[in-house]
Image 1 (tube, rainbow, N blue to C red):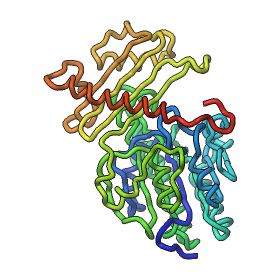
Image 2: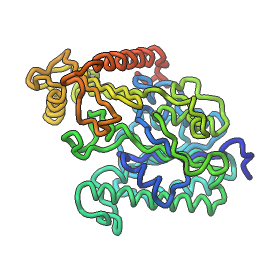
Image 3: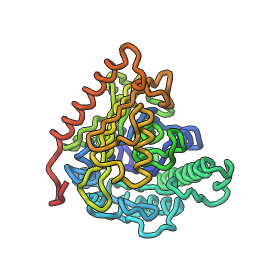
Image 4: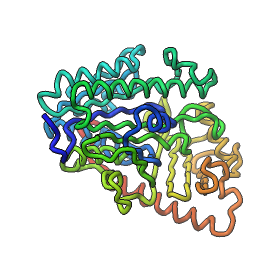
Amino acid sequence: MRLSKSKARSVVGLDIESGFIAAAALAKGENSDSPVLERAATSSLGSGLFRDGEVVNGVTLAEHLKANGYRTFAGVNSRNPYSAHAKYGFDRGFDEHNAGADYNRHMDWTEQFVLSRFSDHHAAGPCFVYVHVNDTHEPWDAPEPWRNMWGDSYHNLYEGDITYTDHYLGRIFSGLKRLGIFDETLIVVFGDHGTEFWEHGFTEKKVNLYNEILHVPLIFHCPALLPSGVAVAGLAESAQVAATIVEIAGLAPIPSAQGQSLLGRIRGDSRKGLDHVCSHTRHEHQRDAGAVQFDHYAIQTLTHKLIRLELHAEADALCSDWKYRMQAIAVRCRAEPDSLGPGTVLRELYDLRRDPAEGDNLLRQPADGIEEVARELEAKLDAWVAASRAQRPPAASGRRA
């Protein structure tokens, strides 16, 4: 069955864990003829909802596609407790949710999972195949020849895993071509978050909302419908991914989704861009569910970024890693590290035009006009938080949100 040229027949979603620099490897490597969103920020991928809505509320992308006749399959190529646990709702809407009980699954398993689902089911109707790719997560132990191909430093090992992942994405694309469905299949490659490499004093991917965490790959590929080799400037957020997939598939929007489709921008309509994007992370006490220890917010425009940390617990109640992170942020904000406690609010403001690495907090010694810029951004951030809460759908499937 050939495509009508008006909509994608099937969808592949490849969620690259910790994939901050994956955009460069994927967009400049062997698999490069796809629109790339240059400034994508993480949010809620599966539901198109912001902040408190997230996956357990509203209608998920998989549920929406299934209701419109898609066979739906999800796989996790390594053991991931968040993807596997039903309470997070990631299984909702999938005919098969293969949630990775095996640490030894890698990209060869991913290739087999994606291609076998299409070869077995595509002839009967459209398919949605989603894979959470964990190979770009620590411990970065890609097989040879990729493991040490860039060197043996901490960062080099990560780059080796990215290159290994890109190689197998190429194999998946070749397999779709052999099946004769490559041109009519929408392929989406995106990251859930980035990874820190001491840019702000820490590694991994925890509380910080700097761009090494928020700036992630977002690539759409469907030769029959989308332009090739396009880098889309401006801002994007991952809550827009579900809406974009649905529009390219030719379906009605997900009723509860808050993210807007990116299709217009991919096709060259600059009027559909965002003037700012917002992010939020919350930390709850590991042994006292529901006891919120801090909220971390960020709002970013093309020129500036404001980050706000709201601490709700005594610093000494945090585990040592979190406590040290809070103290490091306090130093960047000219606050006294030993005075952190409930009610503490720390703010950072960066001029991304001259300081893209977010190293000079303008609020430490504000020049003329800086406080006004911060107030304007904070007002937009507060409006986003209020709107997200007001638009929050009721909990789905009897689960408590």
